[in-house]
Image 1 (cartoon, rainbow, N blue to C red):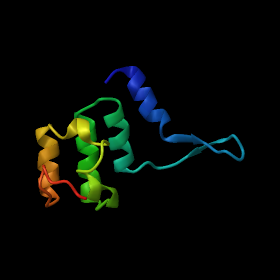
Image 2: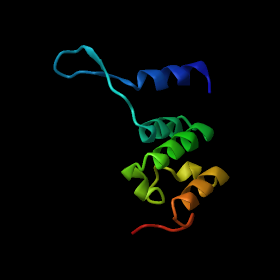
Image 3: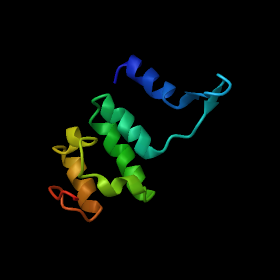
Length: 95
């Protein structure tokens, strides 16, 4: 990952408050970081954060095989292992 992407990830944890214009800090969840890294076309970091989310029983992972959010990772062996560890079939689609 290049330095520009690192800066983007760091900035993603700082949100401007709409009422005061002041910066407030929020703690981003592992699932949020997985989405950020996935959007940066990183293949390793999203898996790391998805595993942390799985260990924390994040509810957003229930739909991991649905939609386009994780489509770029579905061919990654680590993603397949993660999905299997959740008790889902890697090719299973939730309706």
